[in-house]
Picture 1 (cartoon, rainbow, N blue to C red):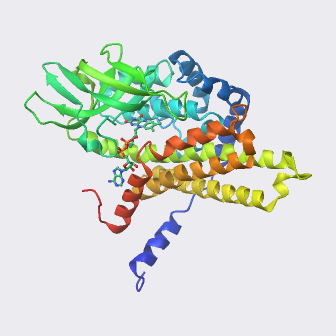
Picture 2: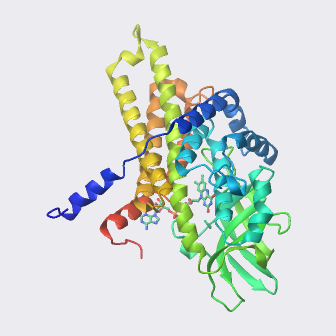
Picture 3: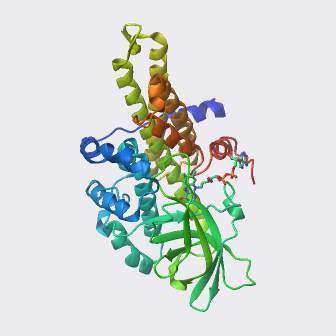
Length: 404
Ligand SMILES: Cc1cc2nc3c(=O)[nH]c(=O)nc-3n(C[C@H](O)[C@H](O)[C@H](O)COP(=O)(O)OP(=O)(O)OC[C@H]3O[C@@H](n4cnc5c(N)ncnc54)[C@H](O)[C@@H]3O)c2cc1C
């Protein structure tokens, strides 16, 4: 538009991107999933979460039950044996699962994302070998990027896979790996080198635990306690050369791409947890009586409810905008980082306010509030911290990078 300055143009572009609505089929999917969560998942969440990291046996049992709704390998097309759902549909089903049971949503989301990573590889042999069992929830997968000394800056990773005739020898440690202790397959991002003297470059290789053993130990953390989070140690771990997912030099690009999607997934997960906390707060505000009145009649409690509802709505809109842009084939770095940063920080605020509405009861393990609060606290770190998302947003707007 002639005469418009750049900032005005930017705002108009944003408004034009707000163009999505659930279809009739998507609403039916949402209802079916809500029903399943109400019957099968919400009632068992607290009990399982108190047990700590979920066993592989239990995880596989739950994953199998989720298959009919499209939770496993969600984005893999039907012609290749997957449910063939869209990114928006991913958001619909995963929001409900996170709302019911945050940890199970994590286990499922990670194996499903790892399936997408393998599916997107050009290595047909690898796809044929792993995808059938993963899609049937006979096996579980994880994605390993972070290291003890390489968190926000994965380019500083030191795990190396060095070619030796027909196999790679892997040495290094990965940290904070979701599903690490229960995974059969690890999609490992590492420096891939052709020999000891080669500096190498970042690529991805698939490690099959049965064939290439490594050490996996649980990291006990504040929230999403039954979602296994692990340290993986690879010591002279021998992996067939044919297991390359992305060769040296291509791994970083693909990791960055899958992180854009992972941020949308984290955003909608945080929305699910916050929405569960808001609904609990609404119910409590109507039921609890003090000074002879339902506490929901007091204006300060009403303010808390209104603030929570506004924030959950805003985060949900940001999340579905980013997911719908992915469906349109846009990389949407800015929008996915906005959704992730806002939703994860929002979930911390909202679960804290919901706890406040509950008074001391919110602190008791008999109520789900303390779990929502602890679970929400984990989201400002995974898939890139809030500060890293803010650097991405500013870089996309300014065209200037704070990092490199
Ligand atoms: C529950 C959970 C599950 C996870 N699952 C996985 C997984 O499955 N696979 C995987 O690979 N990783 C996983 N992670 C790791 C996650 O991706 C990292 O925690 C994240 O990338 C941040 O790295 P770090 O924790 O080492 O923090 P650091 O990078 O050490 O950051 C510490 C602090 O410094 C700030 N900071 C760093 N650099 C900058 C900068 N340039 N400007 C401003 N501030 C900066 C950060 O924002 C943060 O506040 C998981 C983490 C959690 C909590």
